[in-house]
Length: 513
Ligand code: NAD
Image (tube, rainbow, N blue to C red; front, side, top):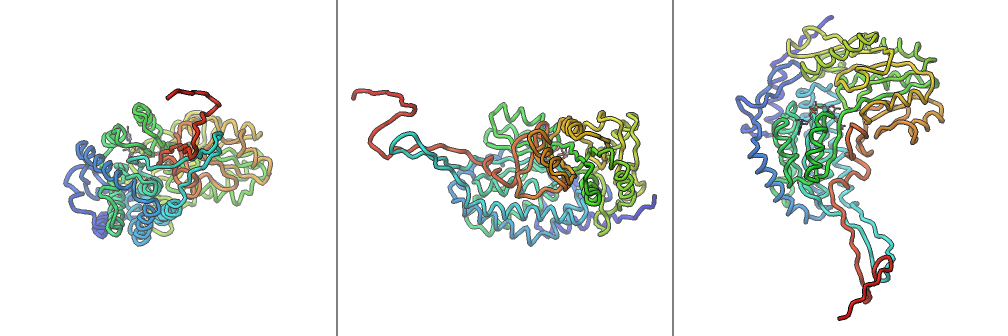
């Protein structure tokens, strides 16, 4: 396999230059601590100073103080603050997008797309800041009025994964800020640099917004141990945690034990069905992006494909051709569509899954490492296509790498049954021109996922729709729709403007005085 030379010094220097342009303070870095590396070359960019548990405790206390002030700032004014963040993000888009590419290996358009998503959710939140509507409810009592009001909830903790290092923060933070909640963010330990840069951008907005309380936005740098501090602190009213299902299994019960509100956005094992009537030209393009984009490292990545027996022998050769021709390489190069895996562990878990697929009688094409590309510590792989005999073994779990398992089906109800027969329930698609099949797939007896699409792939959501999944993918929704309610508390108010005291349900309770 021909390999492209990648210049390691350029990655490190460029990342440090961007951080310096953002004004990230030198005190954020250290000579030991949490390594910040680039998957493009596998090289160390710098060490980042970790937050100690004591510092995390103090920072949460500071955010709790910020809540006392922020909750009384009128919501449209809070929206103005988020508008400033959006403006700063627009100005910083090129640099932050590039840093996403350098730190996580996303191709250039995806790095920029991630920042665009941050801008989009900020714009959404600005509009929302004038629409935190409560209902007025018909009451059975004369001369009474009953209504629901929404109040700020408290400190919002955000724990994020490496693969959307900054967008996930923004989905939560933009809504939390307009809802009146300060945000304490524990980013992935694999993506500390983009978090520090984002915090510097927010500080620019804070500087311009004269009445923002101190510590409205706080970042805690570290791994699981610092995440646990955030999860266990009773001053943190809601925790939005994005990551693997294993992480959610640890975090969920801890939040439940203290009755905290949980937004859990966990792993996916997403599937699509290619039906007999599918537009195969469209399906091939959609499958290619959904299965290979972001090097298979999206929670929404397409991992299982059920293909109708009548089209299987036409679709699979076309997919094989696309897989063989896709350009894997330096994510900074304009022609590259698939960048590196995040690290060695990701590569090893991919190889392990492929081995299991072979043992199960699967035919595996691709999946090998491109030796030499990026250096000894960089992991570039050819995306893998696996024709499987059975829906079993590695097919049933999420392997965070570009592996697509192919299965033949003959009856739609059988395909839907297998589609739903996994732990995760994030996103799904059907490719069909048959209205009955399309409607069945998105109906109550169809896909059991939080997202179900027709004639587009399962990946690449936009912020207007509520995002999240069912079953082992967790609970609640981020972004879009009415997700803001998770960041506020609801109070029901009943007001008596009469002189009588009628009780609900006709209860009589007459006392003498
Ligand atoms: P991960 O689970 O290893 O880590 C995610 C975050 O959780 C990190 O910040 C980590 O430090 C923290 N963490 C881990 N254990 C913790 C604990 N016990 N207490 C507190 N914090 C803890 O995930 P990753 O490898 O960074 O990301 C990939 C995974 O994330 C995949 O499974 C992917 O599907 C999932 N993901 C889901 C969504 C979604 O919206 N559903 C979005 C992106 C990624």
